[in-house]
Image (cartoon, rainbow, N blue to C red; front, top):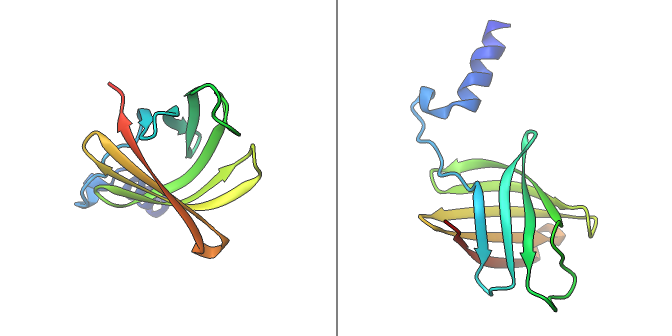
Length: 124
């Protein structure tokens, strides 16, 4: 039991093990094309990206849509894992790369055959 707790604490608090802590993607973000704003926040063990604003006339998106991400840090500036879009019933491989107040997300489907990257700016 103590061994399991030590492993869980090492995973939850990587600084204790000497691994650099990853930059946090949590907060409000504006999409680079100006068509959307999202809030990234914890939702259980996952991160949920919730549309907080969608530019009128933007097809197939609406405020309140949620993307559920199961990601883990792979470096001090990058997260990687999977995402589920319940509105479209689709799963993606996803990476989030942070650089100060900017973030790039890259989502892939069909085993990585189709990918799309999106740039974001943190809203203060």
